[in-house]
Amino acid sequence: MGLTKSYKDGSTPVVAIIGSGFSGLCAAIRIQTQLNISTFTIFELEPDIGGTWWSNTYPGCACDVKAHNYAFSFEPNYNWSCNYAPQPEIWDYLRNTARKYKLYEKIQFRTEITHVAWHEGRQKWILNHVNLNNGERGQTEADIVFSGMGPLRIPQIPKEFENFEGPKWHTAQWNHAYDLTNKRVVPSIVKKVKSLEYYQRTASYIVPRRNATYSAFWKWIFRTIPFVHFIYYKLLYWSSEFTIAAFSSKLKDLIPRKVMTLMAWFFRYVQVRDKVLRKKLTPTYDMGCRRIVVSSNYYPALTRKNVSVHTEPIVGVKGQTLKLKDGSEQEVDALILATGFHVQEIFPKGFMIGKEGQCINTVFGKNPHTYYGLTAPETPNMFFLLGPNTGLGHNSILFMVEAQVEYAIKTISYMMEKNLSSIQVTREACKEFIDELDEKMKGMVWSSTCKSWYQNDEGRVTALWWSSCTHYWWRLRNFHPKRFVGVKRI
Image (tube, rainbow, N blue to C red; front, top):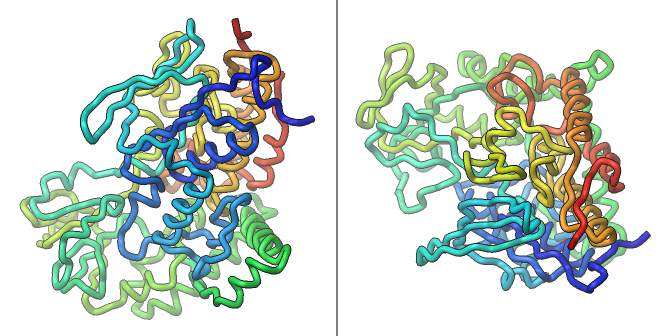
C-alpha cells in the first residue's frame, strides 16, 4: 500500500525541524520527496548548514567511516577524494545536497530554539525562538517536530581548566586566529608547535586508516557505469556490518574479537618502538568498550621528539601552569581541549515540556525511555533523530538516520490516513523495547567495567544500539499501529 500524502481536506501537517545537520536535512528531504510536504521550516542555530561538520573545523578533521558509506543512500556522492573524507568535503556535500533540494529557502539561520512545549488543547507544539543576529523573539506552532540537534553538539569543558589564564578552546570551537607556531600546547599540531604536552586521560585502541585516494578514472566509473557504485556501497556496508561480532562479549564471538584486538596490538607494536611510551599507549580495557580510533598518523605524531605523553591526571590550574596528580607542573602557552561532549544531556532542563506539563529532561533523567530512540509517550508527534540508544560503534550512523526518518514518514502517513491530530507511542511499547535492550546489552562489550560516553554515570548504556544496522531497519521496516494511540482531528 502506498503512503497517504495529505488529510482528506487536502491539507498537510506543519513540520518544524530543529537542526540542519545530516539528520535535519534527511528529514526535510524525505518528507518532501516521500510525502510531498512543503509546509516545513528548519531552525538552525549557526549561520550555515552542517551541524557537527560546520562546527568541527580543527586541523585534520575527518570522518572515521568510509566516505562512500557516509552519504545518503538516495543521494550518492561519486566525487569523494579518498576513503575517509575530510571535513571540508563532507560540508560541501551537505551544502550541495541542500541546494539540490532547495532547502536553503526553508531554513531560518542563526535562530535558537529556546523552548518547546506541547499544547494539548491545540494539539500542537509551540516553539519559542530568538534571532541571534538582532535579538528578535518569535513563536512558531507545528503539528510535527523533528529534533535533529544531534548528541555531539555541547562541548564538555572540565571545571579544572576554567582557571587557565592563557588561550584555550575546545576542538569543536577551533580558534583559527591563534598562531600555534613555536608554541607549547596541550595538545595541538605537532609539526608546528615548539613542544606538545599530550595529557592522555585514557589510552585508545588504534587501527590503521588505509586512506587510499580515488582517481578521476574511478570517479568516472562510479558516476557512469550502472550499478558499480551501488555494489561498492553495499560491499562497504556489509563489511562494516560483520564487525558487530567484535563488540560482543559472548564466547561464540571470541574469534573476531581477538582478531581485532591482535590487529590493534600489532599496529601499536610496529609504530611505537619505545617500550615505555608503548606501555602508556596500551589500553587496559576490552577493545570496543570505548570508541575505536581509526588513524595511521596518531602513533607517529606521539613518537616525535617534541612530544611528551603524560598519563598523570591534571588536578589543578594556576595561571598558565598545569598541576598534575604526581606533584609535577607544566607551563604551557595554549590549552586545546579534546574532552568530548555532553552526550548524556539530551535536552537542557526546562527546554522541552511534553504532555501534562512534564519536563522531558526530568522524565527521562539518566535513563531515557523511548521507542527505538525515536519517540516517547510524553512527546506526541515528536521524532528524535539519533536519539537515545541509536548510536553505533561499527557502521555509518546515516543508515540509522534514514531508517528513523522512514519510520517517521510512515507514522505521519498513518496520521493523515486516519485523520489524527496527534499520535503517541504507548508506555508498554517503550517498556518492551527498553527491557529487551537492557538484556541484550549484557552481552556486549560496551557494558563492561570501562567508562565511556556510551554509558550514563550508573554504567547503563544509553547511547548505542545493541545490534546491527540491518537488525534496526528490520525492526522498523513497518509501522506498528497497535503500539501507538491517536487523537482524532476536530
